[in-house]
Each structure stands twice: as C-alpha cells, then as structure tokens.
Image: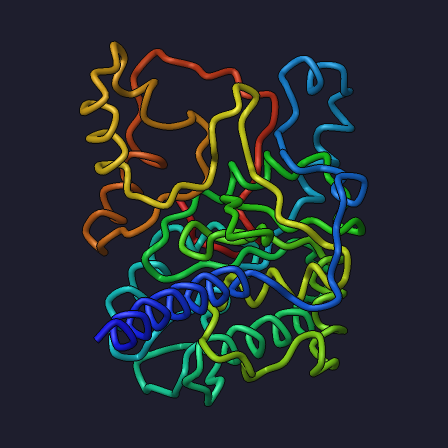
Length: 317
C-alpha cells in the first residue's frame, strides 16, 4: 500500500515537472540570446509638439509625404462582412490596402494564399507584401476585427527611418520572448520585413511548419523569427506613456475605466492618439469611422502641425 501511494506521489511530481518544463520551453528558441544592449528602442514614441515646431514648413511637408503605409489585412471568406467593412472604412486611409485570404471567393477582392495554417498564411502574405510594395516602406498587419487610425500611425513613425529594423505594436512578454500582439496590429519597417523574408529561407531558424510538441501562435512565431535577425518587439506609446495599440474596443476600454472609478473616465481610458482598437464588430467600425473622421465640434481647432493628405485617387473621408 505504501509502495502504491509513493508511486502515485512520484507520478504527480513528475507530471508537474513536465508541465513546468513545457511552460518554460513555450517561449524558448534554441541558440538565441539577447541582452539589454541589443534592444535599442524598446519604447517607441511620436515626436513632441516642440520637436515638430522646430522643423520648417518645407521639412514638415516632406516628412508627411514621405511616410506611406502598406496595409496587410488578413480576412476569411466566411466573414465577408468584415472584409467589406474594413475596405469601406479605415482601409481607405492606407496608401495601399491589400486583403489576404485563405481561399478565393467571388465576392472577395483578396490575394488567395491557398493556405489554411495561420502561420504559413501570414508568412505568405508578408512575402507578397514585400515583393509588391513598390516604394512603400512601412507595413501594417491587421486582423479584420481591428480598427486602425492610419494618420496616427503615420504620426508615430514620422521621424523613424524605415531602413532601420522596427517591429512595433502592443508589446507583450511570454517567458523570455517579447512579441507584438497580433490582435492589436503589427507595424514593420522595410528593414525589419526584409530581414524577416530572408530568414524565412532558413527552416532551422524559422520553420514554416512548427516542429514543437505544441503549436505556437503566429504572433510568437513571428517574434522568434525576427529575434533571430536582431529585431525586437517595441511598444508604441504617446508622450505620456499610454499605449497606442489597444487589444479591446473603445466601449470595453471605457467600461474598464469606469470600473476603476477614474475621475476622468475618457482620460483614464485611452490615448488621444490611439492607433488601433480591437475586437470590433462591423457596426462598431462604422460608428468609429463617423466619430473619428466626420464628427466635428464647431469652433474647436486642434491646431495640428501636420496634415496627412489622402492617398492619390482614394475616396477616403
């Protein structure tokens, strides 16, 4: 009897140890080591008003025209309403918006990747974007349930050099792995995407099909591949340190602020220069479109130093 009880305890201990080992290995990638010296710009912030005011008018015009964004929007034929809503709302503000799908559909204007696996699909979409972006040097990756304010994204990366490796969004951590949350949108500079496309060729460092005992999410797979190339996750913030890439909808964030009994609910909710809100229904996206681009308080002027003109030939608001 004692022997049976002892075996049972040993079994529990071994099982617990194995689970702990799996948890630790979930964020481990062999051969990768990083140090604070490797991580040059962990918190990405937009220029301050003082920094902008130090520029001449011609410099500001040049900057505003130089920042152009290629939007990689991942969609599913089974939810066409999300595709049409993203296309009709915030997608119009991208300099080029391309939709990527797992399969073809007559009603869906999208690149057919002929792929069901989420990680393999994302790889193919990013490779296509890299090959077809022309002179666009910034890339924004989003799910169809994400609403993005592209002008605020352009403001964040205004003074950033796309020939440097930037990987920006809502930075999170799992074990030792830092990654950008997919749901909130992912920003890649040209240099970061170039390195990523190159490491795609190395199956040892960046396999198209996972070889682990368990399947990592595509956002973590992406971070591991980028880490091999010396590109690390950066958290996008405003000058007050508030996050710009949100993993919830506006309504959810306001409710969270109310639950915390904040004196100023809106101030406690989100940044004035927020770039994304997530988990949005098509109806919520249309409401956001009205609130962000059409509703104007009469007599109120925000005195913005820059104007981001719509892409040539677009019908955006």
